[in-house]
Image (cartoon, rainbow, N blue to C red; front, top):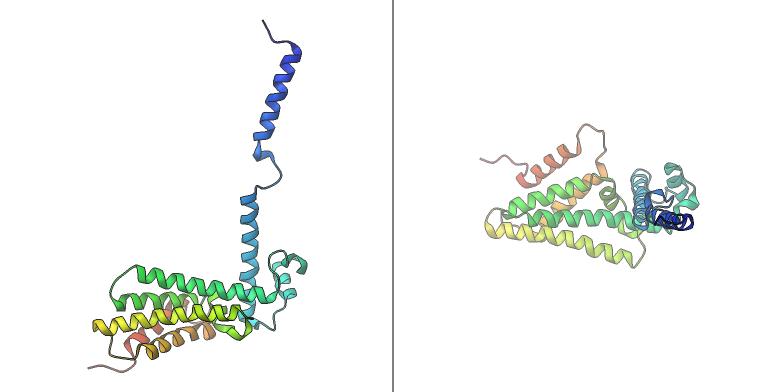
Amino acid sequence: MGASPAGSRATAAKAGVRRRSTGQEDSPWADAPARAQQREAKRNAVLSTAAQMFNERGFHATSLDDIAASLHVSKPTLYYYVKNKDEILLECVKKGLHMTLDGIEASRAAGGNAVDMLRACMQVYADIVTQPFGMCLIRVGDEEVPEPSRTELRRMKREIDLAFRRLVAQGVEEGSLAPCDPKITAFVIAGALSWIGRWYQPGGDYGAEQVAEQCIGTLLGGVLTRP
């Protein structure tokens, strides 16, 4: 027997409900993961823009109004992504530190002798301090960051120093580096490479790779002519 008209309409209605309930592509609202991803992308844009402006103008000379204007948004819009300028600075510096620590750890994990690992770590460090977040890490002092974050950031910086010390000490033990005080040598290496973040200017006579190569070569090889 054929279905009654009422039964056909009910079946079609149910099918329509199923189609609408599964038709996510027709929804004008993004799902939760997509919204979170979009928010994170916009937050990163705020941080990247702020880091660039802090590097160019200085932290105190840069206002939230300046950052908002550069992003072509209103100042109240920024508060959806950050609490205040101090939080922006903290997140920028933390990003620079995490990039450095992650890069150093990856270089050490790649293996090789102490000099190979030291050179790789120096390359990572020199590269990061020419990028906005790394440059912000170098150009903006710890004293600008409020406690307790200041203490945490200094702890992370000590991890970078200790990584260089361990590699120098290992190189001396292997005989691939001249006898030296690992602490002082690590200070010299990190200090020289950090200073790149202060004087390097994108678009200058030397690219970031050239600067890193020459600085690392000088630090490892010295400046005296050898017989």
